[in-house]
Length: 91
Image 1 (cartoon, rainbow, N blue to C red):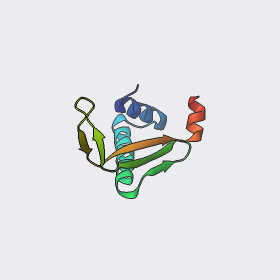
Image 2: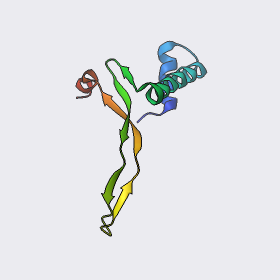
Image 3: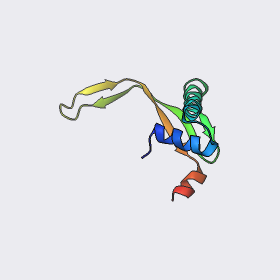
Image 4: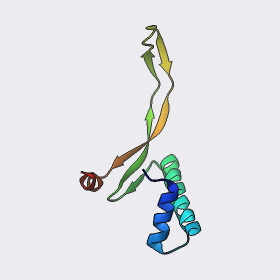
């Protein structure tokens, strides 16, 4: 697995720019994706995939230890769906 730092190094190498500039580019892209997912419903990147926010409604669950019913709060989480192209390249 590579880190954000590794990505910045690869960007700097590919663009022939400084590491500091690559860090700024990467941060800008990640911030744009975060804003779009949270405020605009998601991001679709052709040949890569789609980032979206998935919401789960409040529900009733059962505590397996006691058998007691418990209410689980509504929640949301990030979801990534890879494109068909990316799936083919990985397989």
